[in-house]
Amino acid sequence: MAADDDAPASGLPLSGSQSTSQLPKGRHGLSREFIVSNQRERLLDAMANVVAAKGYAATRVVDVTDYAGVSRKTFYELFTDKEDCFLAAYDAITALLMDKMAQGLAAVADDTWEAKVGALLGEFLRFLAAEPAFARMCVVEVLGSGPRGLARRDAAVEAFYPIVDQLPRSQPGAEKWLSPLTPQFVTGGIFEVVYAAIRRGEIETLPDLEEDLTHLAFRAYLYRKEWEAIGRRE
Figure 1 (tube, rainbow, N blue to C red):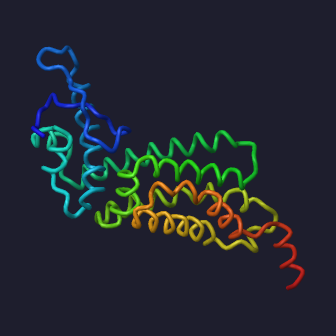
Figure 2: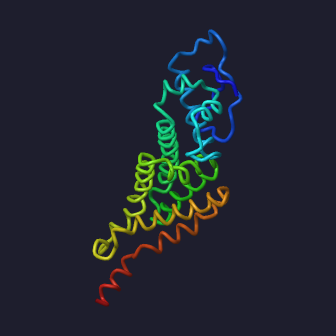
Figure 3: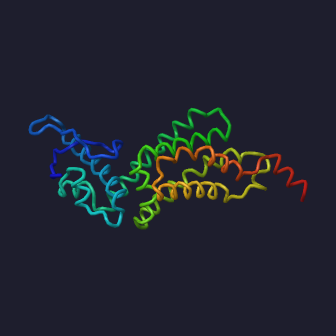
């Protein structure tokens, strides 16, 4: 694809294919701010798709600019290097995912802890299944992206901890009987299952795991009657 500063508009949410719409040539009346933002979104989307196809290590800036239809000059006006663009794409995708999960949680705000965890997992798994390039980039390829990428990944995983842990931790006796490692154990297990499915090329099957993963998360926690039973035995 030829590089062109007024080339196709896509935007990050439209992952999975190169865009086909064109910004009008010449005196189109669009602001410089709009064009720059449009180019940035195309580059972020291109980074996700190219990394998903080639892997982070093999991805070159020229691959991303060719996919996006944006010049190398424009790329370096917007990003320092490949890593900078990758991290920006990771942050944008994570923000989209967190917004989806927040909406899912809001819909069951007055429901049980199990329903909340199920809603969280459901939104997470459906988002990844609907966006396979984003899934591969953010779950698999981020592991080979270097220290800054791993730090972003760790922060994203840790964002799950309080949601998974909050209600069980509030129960009487929880601090005495509930291990502080439980949310890390549960979340890490979920991510490992998801990682394995993506590596096997089974991204579309991820939503099928919602019920099983919710049950496994539930079983990792001890509830009040169980805590009391343990207390009586000691």
